[in-house]
Length: 177
Image 1: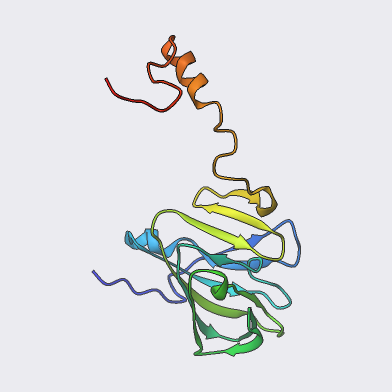
Image 2: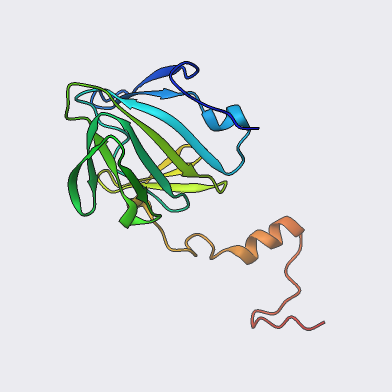
């Protein structure tokens, strides 16, 4: 069944971050209202003089903004440009899709934020060096990257402790029976 959203049936909730420069109003999870499984969308209203989310990109989600009303400045890896009513912007996955909005006007900027949802996503924040595992919102510093095998050098001892006996395999990796 088709569901129509408009100013008469959308309730906005203000989202104010601990950093005063980030503030917006958002519809409450419109996709969940209609039971969407793979598509997330909300209508947002970016307050004058405020930024959207911190500058970021997604590893596993594509995103589209449709400017419904007003203007805003868009920051991407290519620089800054002005968006206005009717503009549609696609953000690909990876660093090339990094983006952030700033409302440089005296009026709100309303836009549709449409994005794919493939279950698990990782958002990266180039300005602050963070990664965010979504939907869990677990944030880590990218400087903490480690080698894949770090801490894996005592695997045999862990197995022996768990099994209560020494391994039946030789140290040369012989696994014949």
